[in-house]
Length: 354
Image (cartoon, rainbow, N blue to C red; front, side, top):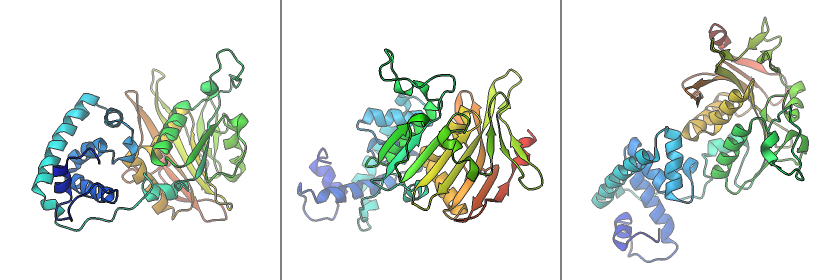
């Protein structure tokens, strides 16, 4: 805010007392700038908000990094983002010069976590929470040792892309939280506020420990599938979809949330294959869509334990995950604080008929 000219500061704080460079004006300037950005169209607002570091999912130290981050999400070049951002800032300058949008009182500026409150509630994460991530392991490769000549700590991790995705978005959304990641063989229970486990029981022993408490199991390769034995009148078995040429087209994503009496929220991000696990990560953490999905799941499950199964597609090298507010899960099970899971939604026939 110190880089703003006095003229621009005066326009942003129209009809306010005379300006000074006191620290107390900074929240009012931020509020006025946010109000100006909010007056843009949704299309322009996205680019301007990223430029001004107002989007938590694109919160990076430099403008170039923020624009590159937005470009990756939109699937376009950074040059395209810069062009649209320039147009959005031109419009923003006109709005600020006009000043009509400032007719109302300044909104109250509050300190809040970068991610929406609903997302924090979903994961059981507050500003200074402790979050542990346990990633699956490659079964045919021993865990690297620090004294190995070519030591790489993450060389033995199976769902590494999902781990990096989750860890990056947690760091952006909750910068004050303590986030640690573990190989299954090195994890120890330290009573974290949130425990995120990635993979499947056959490649993550931490996931397997929850098996007795869950109504489903994974069949490992060469015939991967997720099974719900004794579900309703018959067993449910869902398997990945392959093209005739052998290319993977879709995988099953299984998202489980368990709330322990001690207060730990356990999130299991599962999949028959690594595509499904990455799909689970993106379903919950992918910017605005992730916030919509977590808010929707919290709403339909009343904040309780649940198991949601959906399909993650691979389209042209892109991991395509559904927006759960418009595309319902294939299967949704919920339960009260005690007792077994009950079926809330079953659309598995639509997937099985593919």
